Image (cartoon, rainbow, N blue to C red):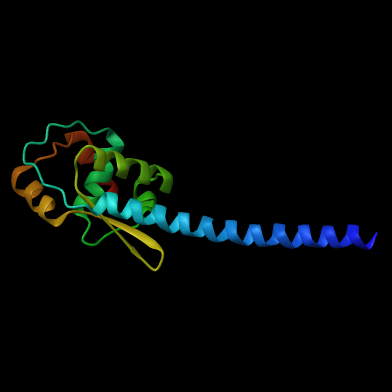
Length: 145
């Protein structure tokens, strides 16, 4: 009987140890995933000046929110402003990046902030690289008032 209890205790200790190792691995994977996301968004882009891309209504709204922002915004702030969920803001951010719009991402105290690349922002102001639907501009300006 004692041998059986010792075997159970040994197995319990081993399971507990493995659980600790798995927790450490999960934490490291989460950090690695965050870092990969950060690198993906912040890699230097060669900013092209001949954008011929179409944005969805929500992508245009996100683009405008980032364009007029005076500081980097968190997905939570953007979600509140646009009436979206944070998940949707993140999805639309990745869609903008995949379409070649240079978005910068930084993490401060475990909070992620995003913004348009400053050089791109200046080019957009000068050359209107991304065409935004007039109705979206009007609706967005009504949201801001």
